[in-house]
Image (cartoon, rainbow, N blue to C red):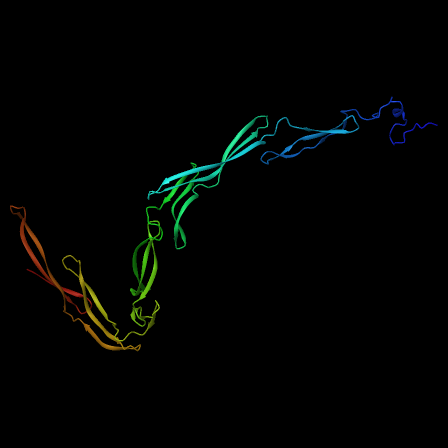
Length: 368
């Protein structure tokens, strides 16, 4: 019996196609364009020219290709690119030049890359493309962008000139010009000052030596001292003075130490009683009268002891004269001379203050 079956699973069950050419191998294959699956949502994030991310709607439909295969087709869900989508972008360095004539006749000049010019082509979401431009700066307003080092003073840099960034320009502006002054380290002159100790709470000081130094330009119109040398002119043990009952001696190392009063140092413990007196004619202050005084004087022996030198006491007696004087009083008679001066008499009063023996005084007067 002739063989007529097709043993391939799912295939035709006869062999006519191969035997007589009247049947097709594509029997049962979907026609081209037939939707096999979808549409399926394949939306995703995509990046524009400068890396901005946008969510883009897509759908994918799978069609038969007519040959037993398939053809997936993805469809974009927008008519235009979304608003903000950057299609192109370029950057150009922004350079500023400066040229300043300085006080010493030199020129400060140069170029500064102040920032970057940016240009973007951007979609607005309706199919129209517009240009956005701006400049980003490398410096903040007032920031130093260039300067010329002159040297160092006490470890700090000093510059001959300096320029800064002016955002409102934008421009480069001259910050300062030190060229009128001698460069850092230029010798100016020499000087000196005393090495002096001052004792707190006392009006007492002592110069125990001095310092010499050289002055050099600081490059900014002033000077600084260098090459200092110290010289001590006071020897150790020298008596410096007394302060609040303490006696100070130089210790040879820039400070003082306390000790006994030096031999021959003297002081007294005077006490006195006084009264104020006044002019009798107008009551104005006239002066002071001491009516009692006493005390002793003491001399140091150099061994922390004081010897009494002498003592005294004095008291004014009642009737001792304190002060005297005279004042005048004019009494007119109501008539006048040819010069317009009033005629009359002048009386003169003599006065004397006497101590009353009790801390006050009495006054004696007579008129002539």
